[in-house]
Length: 587
Image 1: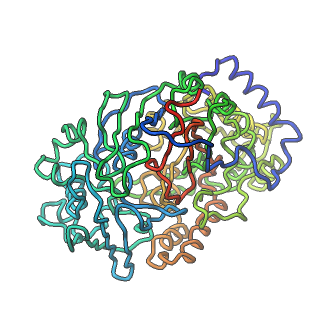
Image 2: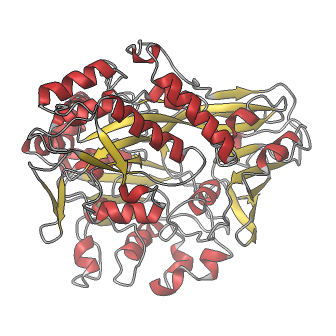
Image 3: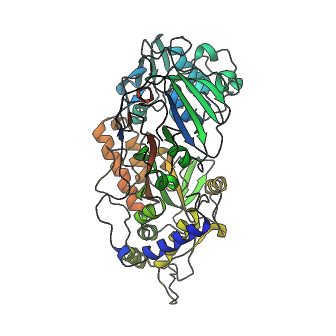
């Protein structure tokens, strides 16, 4: 709701706080579907036309950086732009695991700690050069080079045998990469973990070795092959660039699956203030980054349909339970932390009506999150786990049981020793809804007798917020944030003892064992893995070091001249399959 005035936002907040505190809202949530439901397949009538141009709007108030190199691009929208050109090497199934049928097939050999990749014979760069094993080896050599400054040389990549030795200059080759032929290579890992099934430690896309091998690593990020003339083996290649604003794609004449249905794509940055009018006047076919602030204004347009799908992420409340030990590289949980009592944490979770927050502030595009395993991961999502549903009486009872009593009759509970209990709550600034939602949380916690105030008395800017979390700022007892899971359901990177992103600083021997199961060789077995993930979700629900608040939906506006658009996870439908039924988007 970035465009709402302060007055409108205040009115919304006031009406929401009033309704959320009423008797009806105290009823337990029933088992029913809430919020906006998925709409994964969009189809329109019409006969495809020739020579039409697909027009895509990326909604942003900032320009793109323009780093079009798989090893150096680090975030949207650069990665989004790359997805239209280099995308296509590996296909994924409905659970986002790698599958065959793309520009390369993959065979896993867990018992040998190996993966064998066979590149499609027709897989070719847009300059006519075949994609070969050398293009995947080049990727490894770039990210493992001592001069590499990007973010790709992570724990998964370091799991390849011999890559650490290459990085340290102890070897000129990477022993875990074996070239079998120009179109086939073998990878050997130090440990075969389930993450490999999702592509952990495997380049998702190749890089053009024939162009990059003679360019020093330190020069590649700024080189023309990255900024002006990047190559692509995918359906399209970048033909023209208006720095920071627009990219024009042309069909790759050597695309292994044949010519895309639409030969030209224009991808453009569109400010959020302009996108509704632009869609209504028929300027664009597809949107990227359409958010809940704009949903109510777009959903009723007659010339577009709205695609809806689960986001790979969630928002959550985190409790500061310890500190990060830099020397040991692990979290140290403090049993005497202010928020150490699990019943205190659980009570704060039951005090919040997340379905009401999602409906009032996010147009129904967010709903109560029941667990730390998102619904998109169908094999691992536990339907029986209902999460922290709104229940003020249960919240009060938990606090009573834990010994947090109001000893002086002022309506505010003291701690277990009868001393004042003041809880510091960190929340990020951004948009018209940030402050009303934070105020709602604080008011709900007051309803159960807890004295909660904003850290430093105000909302905190994004970068400063995460700096404070990372530094274990003593002024933070509880915080609200979000986490993007990506396509790999493994939670270790956020919740393990050695994860720097484990901002709540929660670690126990029991959690260690569960994460060990998830990362074990045994977890390559689907049933074993599913059981381990559900054990994780239930353990974290019971112990509540973090409490998930809302699952989110992504939305895409699709113009009525787009014959078909499919968002179904695991579908083989892609951008090259889009057909247009008119010369210009329909107004």
